[in-house]
Every structure is written in structure tokens, then in C-alpha cells.
Image (cartoon, rainbow, N blue to C red):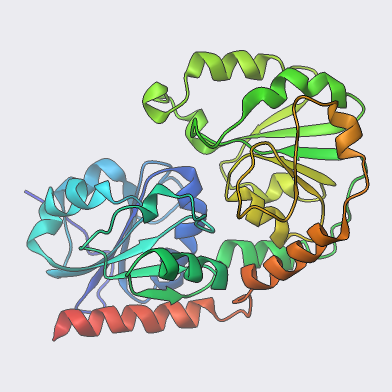
Amino acid sequence: MPTQYRDKPTNHPVSHVFICVGWQVYVDMLPFFEAIRHTHNAFFFTNVTHEGFSSQVRPIAELLGFAPPERRAVVYFSVARHYAKYVTGGTLGSCATKMVKISHGITGNWSRLLLKHREFIDVVIAASNLDADTYRNRTSYRVETIGWPRAEAFLKLNSTRKIDERTIVVSSSWSRDKSDFRICDRIAELADYRITFMLHPVLTKPTFSDVDNLDPDFINLQLEKLKGAADVVQCEQGALPHMLGKEIMLCPISATAYEWVVLGNRPIWFLRPYDELDFGRNLEFDKPLRAQIEAPEPARYGERRQTLRSRLVSHFDGKWNERFVALISDMESALLK
């Protein structure tokens, strides 16, 4: 028998089901769930954690047998394959549904999420004007710019944080064609900097393998080279806390480059070139690293970061929850017709 959940009676004839796989999704999806969990029949299924929350937050394994109190549901997801696995492949398949895509942070235009149109997606939630334009220019989805609650709240709480001199934060990626772990071979050249190396959450999964595009043995070998030279940190609560107060960023092709700009106008170096990541210089590995990093930066890069930042914080006005509630009311109305 399907598992029934009815923590509290509500007047809403529609359930709201959040499908969350991975820490990088968790930190951006959870605020939307928290915004409505006291007023709607909302349920959060995740492979990350369900401890310390109400029974509305459940292990992802229970989703296949989940039957919402109502036979209508708005489903929030990040990964397209979860539609077949958890919706059409589970008891949600017998419900009338509206599908809402929530990405983590900003979706770069290199994302594979943009390559194939998914007919079942009813609306995409965008975090900012930059994110919305990326979707509208490359897809035909309905896009609603709601905001980026995690980044907005973090910036507000840490607006007076000063920069620590001679600090570097290095980002990583799980994708072979976007990451660049050559920096681990050259880390000794930056010995007089305090370096933080951020592991992408996918790289910390127990099941991580070359199926995820990078060989675990290679990753472990490169990380060994950082011992005593860098503080290697996991980013279970996102990259923002580890970027806070840092002076310089070294970044592969990654959305963390955009998060860096949210925190202020500070230098960023790209470990791999990408045309639209034009707000920082490209690190050249055939040349000494320190001389490049300490060279004066042309003014045009700072100007580009300033312009980009205005597009990234476009909806940092404290009203993201109002826009979100308006959107889900629209989804509910469509299901009740």
C-alpha cells in the first residue's frame, strides 16, 4: 500500500512535492519548501538528510510509494530523469501534476539542462535576470523570475564582512570538460597564500565514479597534492560560506563564478577559458602562476563584474516568497480547472 502522509489538515486541495537529490540542490530548494510547509500540504523528499525536520521531510526512497492526500500535486524537481523515476514510475503517476523546475543557484549557459526540451516541464524558476535570460534565449520554457533566497539571505547577513588579505579560494567541478585539476600540480607556487579548495558536492558522494565524468583515483591523487598547502573543504551548505572574505578566486567553468560576483567586485581567474565568462582573466598554466595573479588587473574586468552583479542580484528585494506563492497559486488554479 502507498504511504499516506497527513501531518495536518489544510484547505488546499493540491499537494506540493519537492524532489531533492544532492547537497547542491538542497541548499537552494529547501527555502521554497520552508516558505509553504506550514500553510500547504508540502512534502520534501531528499537523499541528503531528513533528520531534525518534521515528518514532511522524508528519505528519497519513500517517494516511489508516496501517495499525496490529494490526487493533484505540484512537483518541484531539479533533474529531468527524476520525472520518469519518481513521477511516471511511481504512485505520483496517477495524480494530476504540474512540474516546476528549480535549479541550484544560477544556471550557466554551458549546462546540459538546456540542451534538450522536456515537454513535461510547465515552468522554470529563475533566480535572477541573468538566469531568466539564459533560459529564454536557449529554450521555449515558461520562465518565472522568483529570486535566489539562499544568496540573498547570505549577503544580507554578511554584508559587512571584510576581505582577508592574501587568501585564495579555488572551486572545482564534477565534469571532465569543465573542471581543471591542474591547479593541484602548481599549488606550491602559491605557498604564501592561505588557500581554500572547495570540493564540488558530487565529488563527495560515496557512489562517485567515472560514470560521473571524473575518475575518483585521479581526483584522490590530485587532492593528495594539496595536503599542507590548502584547506580542502566540503560544500554541503553551498560555496558561499567558503568564499566569504576571500581576496581572489580561481575557478573552472562553474556557476560558482557567478556566486563569487554576488559577494562583491573582487578578482577572479578562470582555470579554463569560456567565452561568456569574460569578467576575469584566464590563468595560463605555461607561465608562472604568482606573477599572473599579482599582476594589476585591467579595469574592464571590474566593470564587467559590476554590470554582471546587477543582473545577479536583480531580485534581492525581500519579496521572493511573495512571488513564489503567487506562482504556486497559479499552478494550483490550473490543476483545479
